[in-house]
Image: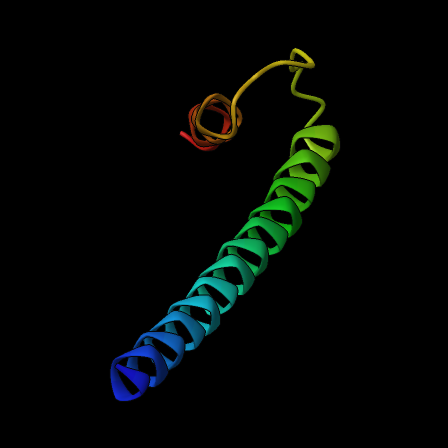
Length: 69
């Protein structure tokens, strides 16, 4: 019973560590997306392309690509 308890504790600890790693990856991805969005916004301003405050990243990219063609 003690061995089983130890095994469960170790599994739980591993699960917590994996969860932390996953949260960190999500956070890093989110930060990268924010940086990309800032760069896109800067390009849109440079080309004086009008955007709406609630435009999605895809919409902003589409507007930028349309301007380039």
